Length: 193
Length: 265
Image 1 (cartoon, each protein chain N blue to C red):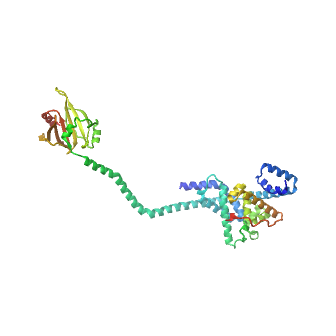
Image 2: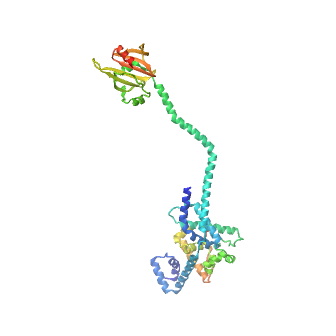
Image 3: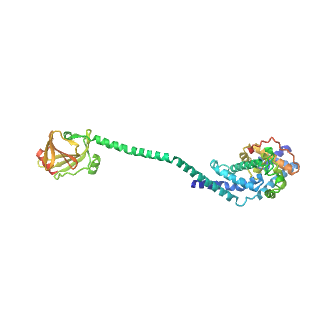
């Protein structure tokens, strides 16, 4: 019994400091407070179940973030299977992370995000593909280095740099009302796997 | 440095990932180029927007407590699953295990006690009849007596308790274990008595009843004792049983003197 008890205590001691970061990332990815809470709870539960595989001394936040992004993807896939809840583009690369603006402006949770973030920035983010959005959020919200982002997403550091550059370019263009669809579909969105 | 070269480096500069040398070049270029400076300002403004939004973000009240409770529930489920698994295992294997345990116990008992039974049997079969003549011969043979002074130790070595006999005028010279390849170990006591003619010697063997036998001897009734008297070489001997023990007294004294000793013993 004590063994189990110590395991949970050790897990909480290691992972609790990142609760706010994980929730914020989930919230920005899903645009829904309740979904974000559910995702964070599921993330902690999955991490606790696989805590025996965690290598002591490695990046806890990176490990938790990787699990959270998987849970977010599972949640988004469920939404795809339940189109009544949300309209999702067929193209996987065009799967938006935040709820469709027209469908969610009535949602108080999205209104909460809108209070946190400029509406025009939110609009630009909503239309960003996940392959560009994930690196951008991990960099801007979580202050991760290129190497940390690369480890979390399982892509090379050079790819992280180029995607960050493109993501910022898209956002800036849209913010300056010069939005052009410069995002090409060749972006391999294998983070959605 | 051209503007097309600078644009990709602005992101790296903003992320603090640009080397010092390149940083200086880009900053110099920004001072001179309005277009790139504008690009840089847009980038910084975007990053500032993220920072502002990030700082406003709050963790819902009670979320971590709810997660902690869920982890406790998960932990409890793990315990339950562990014990359920153990219980199922026990129920499934209790009967075969009990049979195996009984068999193992029997095997263990056998392992522990069989050698002892074997030893007892060996001991019993090793008890051989000792000839009085041989014992007389071995009185003067080297290496047949292993000296043991302590009476309890002597009893332990020979494997039977030792009875007392009355020899008031004799003094024990030595005692020990008589060892022979043909018979079991037995106790031997050598006594000495002072006289005008010099020292007189008497040796006494004590063994479990029935071990010592004399082939040629005369049976005499001596004060209620049935004693076999005989001689071998220059020695006289007397053999009788008493209190479950065989006693063989051997001396170079005459037969009447030996009779007198046995009578008082």
